[in-house]
Image (cartoon, rainbow, N blue to C red; front, side, top):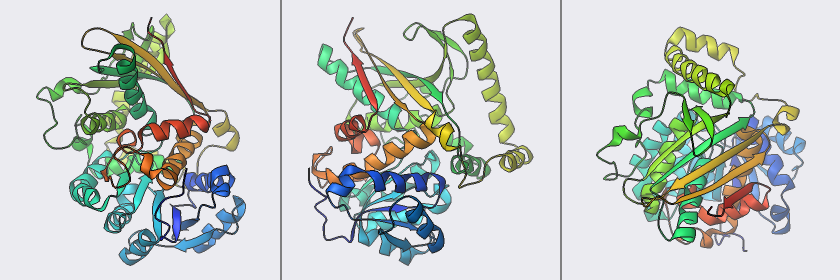
Length: 411
């Protein structure tokens, strides 16, 4: 393993938005990481407030790392940040409000970039504006590197590998059932409210919003998000709609196009509620509640009330609550000939905070430390997904960081 070839850059990684709720966790993660210390990784914290950044690096045990003061809408500051960094990790959301100049600067300077956005309409705009230039520059721009949407993307990716290994053919469909325990932070909710307030509902409803041109199937409506409860024999459980599915499924479908999954590949995901009659009731109530809450939040007065009652950006669950969280993503893949593969991804810690921090930081470290081992090699770039941009290297890094990956043998 070697440090990124771009030692001409001042920093191997810059953590942007470091004083936010998840940002502070990324600083602590880097400060404690054995490879960061052993390999002498050059990193810095960045954001708009010097005093807050100074406090974060002190409180997180990194008093000697550099502080880079840079405001998100200052093009010159974003250019300077991107020019100095081999990799930028960003937690500064809502990304549609604070992320566009930074991504544009990273593309201009051939700087790799990861973030934790779940804002699919914003990423669609990035694809339209920057994909071609990022390819030319060899810059890997990889949004969705948190719980949005790494477990989903890697589940489909690993299902394809398992089907090839066990049966010598690809998966024609994959589905995932999630079990989660955890809370929300203020930044995540702020991003949601901003998407609703900006009228992006129509774009969010497109199942193939993020797909490359020419890869939308003629039966796109058949891939619409499920809304009702269902009893699923593959999972032996009742399933309901998963609130993150409208984000994750779009990411997986872009991966399917970029990685060449078979034509007509299908992907869906759900929330697993259990096997008994109580789970059937819960799935029904969840389905009805999800539909009504989505409709209510489209109304400005209700959305503003929800914003007032929600934790503000920079706030989130307690340390004890985050430590007590967990997630489990069970996946099932089917081939056109009827073969089946199964597996799961799981981890301890609040998925939107602890697990997200781990996934985001390991994504950035994959770019900084193992660039030549990533899919496409060192010069590959574009608006990518976690699976298409980080692939097996990310799986290996997350496994070493304690995340569980299981693939079950064929029955």
